[in-house]
Amino acid sequence: MTDFTKLALSEARDGLKKGDFSARELTEAHLKAMQDAAELNCFIVETEDQARDMADKADHMIKAGTATGMTGIPVAIKDLFCTKGVHSCSSSHILNGFKPGYESTVTANLWKDGAVMLGKTNMDEFAMGSSNETSYYGPVKNPWRAEGEEKDYVPGGSSGGSVAAVAADIALAATGTDTGGSIRQPASFTGLVGLKPTYGRCSRWGMIAFASSLDQAGPVTKTVRDAAIMLESMAGYDAKDSTAVDVPVPNYEASLTGDIRGMKIGIPNEYRMDGMSDEIETLWQQGIQWLKDAGAEIVDISLPHTKYALPTYYIVAPAEASSNLARYDGVKYGLRVEGDSLDDMYKNTRAEGFGAEVKRRILIGTYVLSAGYYDAYYLKAQRIRTLIAQDFARAYEKVDAILTPTAPSAAFAMGEKSDDPIAMYLNDVFTVPASLAGLPAISVPAGLSTEKLPLGLQVIGKAFDEETVLKVGAVVEEAAAFSAKPKIWWGVK
Amino acid sequence: MSVDKNIVAKIANLARIKVGEDELAPLVGELNNILDWVEQLSEVDTDGVAPMTSVVEVNLPRREDQVSDGGYRDELLANAPTSEHGFFAVPKVIE
Image (cartoon, each protein chain N blue to C red):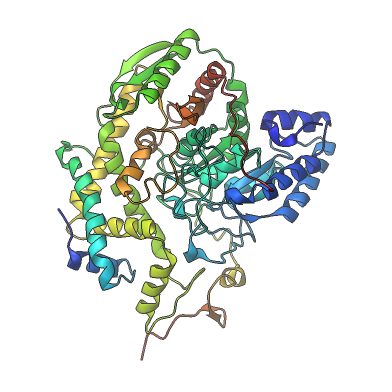
């Protein structure tokens, strides 16, 4: 019998269409996997009853001939998406008990296409983190461990529960969100494909805001083809998000032709960082060779402001976060801790409701926006953001896409970087520039580290050109032929 | 630029987060580490560069100024820690 949990989303779609198995059977197999892997702490809430109802509805759609690419596909949803009547707290205590009366546009799009929700996944609190260690609900364990090790590794962040659920074959795919690398870095840490679309491609309506000029939803999947199928369902114009861009959503799967002959791929010199490990450099060179072999032309390019992207991000993102998170005041939803006065109640609630990293970022954000510092920090950062976007615009006069490593290292052990915020921030050094410029980018599994942990390569594209990103990503994927899976150490003992 | 205990206490008050006296010193250290690190931005020449206001070039869409949705008072209040008579309830603010 087929182990349904080992299928790719595209294979499950084809099997459902042919009637080889039902959506209900597919869902039951994944619900069982979810139970067995509780130890990984991927899920904050499991929605089994809802999953069965949705699977039955999907089976009806398949019978009626109205199935889409996502019909009957069991997916995990990051806790940052508001799902009607279901726990949606961005892994923060301050939203304790919050059950929205509405559905985010991205998840509504998936449900309309017949996808099945398994549950809400764990994440860094308000998506602020790169290791999934800042969640109120405890850290997520990476299904992957270094060879011969029995300690726990981080799955990356902030979409840590989403990637762990897909890597452990609990979900066929998951939604993630990416503000500075929160889809791509965890995908790289777990041997998966993670796609951050162009800013404006997916509606942000019903996503719990972190940094509104950067936040963007995207898929976490086992293959590039799966990412193409899922993005097509998630994306689209939405009148409820004024930054959602009204451009047609193409058939992304059709872009996977494998033909990149004559395409120009940029290699940015500035992504060779001091102290970067040899294995990352070697992997990158390997990726360049793969694209050359497939007929692409490699072009050296310069993105001169790359080194300033991370500090720029750590002004812009906390500034927006301090403003967005002002809404958590103990009045409208979630936690309230009483006090002697209204102000006291606010302060007590926010002191108890936010974790250390979130508080740190709110304080930094409040500082850089405060009178006397606004110009020196916030305006300065926004000017440098313009320069970073101009660097990319200039490069794209010469090239069609850019190839870089996704992260400066493989997954690290739990606790290894949690005491040093800046060491943690450096995880996003290769992903943040594309975020600041609003560009689409994908991480594709490309190899294993010497410790036998997954490593990804990143393809960055032009705005709204996810098709090229997917096409080049698929060529990297095919050449890498990454087939390693984590050795199963978790589960019912 | 760097912060001291007084500035951190002031920011915490602006952000409405209660920070105990014993938490101030560690926060001063943490925030100054971050501020020292972002200080490198001062070496970038940004004269004549416009600050970014929108990452994608779009004109914000317009629509008629008409109510298109609403009427969810009870649904919204269902998530409130306390509510009374169809309103959010807060501690007394006027003596």
